[in-house]
Image (cartoon, rainbow, N blue to C red):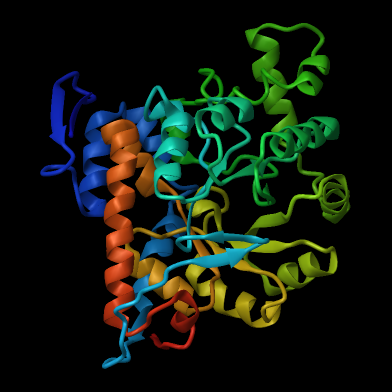
Length: 381
């Protein structure tokens, strides 16, 4: 299996996915940097402000060490988990990332198809390049969740949720840490906005409620309408309650870092929380996700699933998050870089490698299923 990509210096590079596809995260990232324009790569790779949080997300994993239990029979490994009435073969999900056409023309379609091959749920972004219906048609029968940015015109939010429900999506992920766009210095330096270039309009330009909210329909009003809708500082718990009442699908809040917010989510009947700081892309100087995880797991006390996002780069990172009590983990930048390097085949190869790393790390930790991971001793600095 081989493919080619054009680097940012317009030199066509060839990669064989069996022999030469980058294995380590660092090499995948380097290959993506070569394959993408400087501004596009910077948009995906960078964090908010001085990127303290983005760096902390990965560095903080080094502060946690597994104490393995040996001489256990791990010959019958079971990586499956059950959440929200569904059984998934692994504890992995692909995190919602918008404007994926920046990395590859097939964008969300390519990622969703690669995820479907390994039965990994794909969480589609509100600002995806293709619509809910496009992705559903391309990956019929696979597990998909929909990530919602609450809209200023709330009927747009309700309609997108309805569309996801009708398309067979299994859950709604409401992102609560993006009421306005973070201060991203590198994007400002490059004067770069993927939305302005039309990369994240798939769901909006196909939504009747959104289109009816415009005074007229053209490229300018569509862009301005999207910007006006997804910047919504008024988002609060009343909206969460309305969303919960509007659908039968599970509602998961993404962006929870404070234990009290997790407890309040349970009080409002939310079905799960995702511990996340948006990969360090929103507010700089906040706690790393892995450091926030233990306290949230403690207060939630198994009342709802606790998922983890921000900083996962290798299988051992997933093991650490699961051992600290996460029920599942989300992967973000690594699959986007893989998409940039090799399209759909690149994402497939990345998932194959990551799953092998995860399974090997589980066995060497002395556990045969995901539930046993939380029984491992963890040493923290």
